[in-house]
Length: 278
Ligand code: C2E
Ligand code: CA
Ligand code: CA
Ligand code: CA
Image (cartoon, rainbow, N blue to C red; front, top):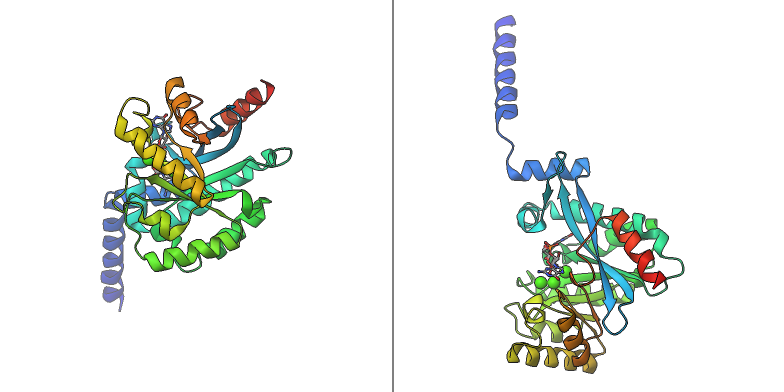
């Protein structure tokens, strides 16, 4: 009995040693980072092109490692999506962002906060119920939350996406079609999802006023927005020329380095305060 116990003990010991010696893969590293709260929201202001008034923000995730290194989403969002870690990551991000931005609610009836939602997460059973619960805890009304769905990848289940979009809007959320025109789906998503907001991809914005085709595409999207009652937002505005061109073309809102890069909370609060003073 003793011998069997010793052998079993050695086996367990070996297994434990083996599992702790296995170098942590990228999924493990990401899981640990989420647990430790190393994935934090950065905020980029969204402003009115005509007045430069800030009317909201987009939340963009950053991985701030313990040594201070900043990791950009392109390096870990694909891992988060493939592993399913995108779900806990997004839930924590929404909770943290809305909690720390809650002081901005009063006195700014228009201010909205936008989140990037992975389409596969969006169509998961119970997505909206979980979101409702998190949002309610923070005191934000659903009507001030924007859900950005990218057109870049195909939706895993378009019928379900249309159904969830409808239900989300019934619950008050605003739906934004991200990267419009840059995906593989033509304009089909605009027709199917009937978004409240159409975001023009920075691929077009970056050459606005200089490339004829980009200007024509922007014109088409502005037209579509008007016909459908959707707000058109341009992303990636870097220069005053671009801002002026887009404003002239009838684009209502925008974001980009011209006003600010995505910044952490403290800098975002100063940014808002300084803006309101002018
Ligand atoms: P996106 O949703 O299209 O976000 C816009 C990207 O453009 C951001 O890159 C932003 O920092 C960058 N940007 C903003 N203004 C300018 C500008 O004037 N010039 C240029 N060149 N770039 C500008 P970022 O933060 O690196 O995010 C990259 C992508 O990662 C996002 O693209 C989005 O698809 C994804 N992502 C970021 N945060 C999240 C998240 O919390 N959840 C999910 N599912 N995806 C996220
Ligand atoms: Ca986005
Ligand atoms: Ca975008
Ligand atoms: Ca984009």
